[in-house]
Image (tube, rainbow, N blue to C red; front, side, top):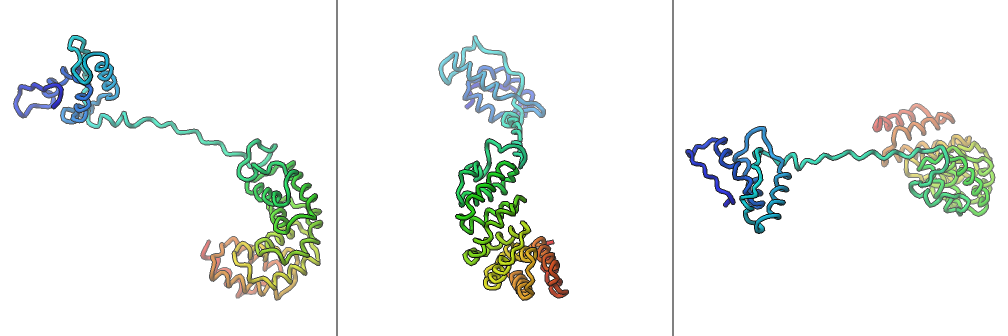
Length: 319
C-alpha cells in the first residue's frame, strides 16, 4: 500500500481533476520509497502536456528523509515543505533520461607530406625515423612505410638514398626490390643507385619470387635505365617462369615494365596475352588493370582485334 491514503469522497466515476486535488496536498508528506512507487503509478493521475522534473523531487525527498524522522518512515509534519504543484505527467522520465550528448570534435587529419619530419609518425615508420641507422631489411620496411604514410620529406629521402648507396653491395635481392619499388612509387628513383645495383640484380634474378621480380622490373622501367644485359636476363627468366605470375597485380606490373624496357621478343608478348586471358577465367581483373595491359600491348603493337575484343569483354564486368 502507498504511505499516504487518497481520501476521495466522490463517486466511483471521479474525474482526473478530483483525484489530483485530493492527492497533491499530501505529496509532501510522502517518504522516499513511497514517492518512487507513486512515480510508477503517475500515469493514473497525469494530465496531458504536464510533466514533473522527477530527479529534483527525488533529491528533495531524499534530503528531507535523511535529515528528519526515522529512516524509511514519515518525516515530521511540523517541518513539512510546500506541496508540489506539478503533477506526474505521462512519460515524465523521458526528459531526464535523454541527456544532451555533445559531439566530440573531429580529430584533425595529419598533413600527408611537406614540411619537416613530424614528431609522431604513424605505423611502422615511427620506429624507422633515421635511415642512417637502418640495415638492408630496415631500409626495405622503411621504404614501404614511407610510401604508405605519404612521406614527402626531402631530407629523409636524401638520407634514405645515401644509406642505400652505402649498403648497395650487401643488400639482399628482396630488400632491393622493396627499396626500389618504394622509391619508384614515391617518384624518387635514383638512376645512379639503380645502375650500381644492376650487376648484382642480373646475377640473382633466379632467386626472386614473381612478386619481387615484378616490382624490380617495374622500378627499373620507371627509372628509365636501359641495360641490354638486364633485358636479356629478364626475358629468359620470364619465359621460364611465366606460369608463376598469378595475380592481376603481378601480371599488370610485369607486362607494363617489359614494354617500357623495350623488349622486342614477340613470342614473349604472345605468351603474355595467352596467360593473362587464361588467368581472367580464374580471377577478376579490374578495368584499370586491363587498361594498363592493353596500353602496354598497344605500345609495342602486339595486339590484334580478337585480343582487344576479349579484353573488352572482361573489362565490362568491373566498369
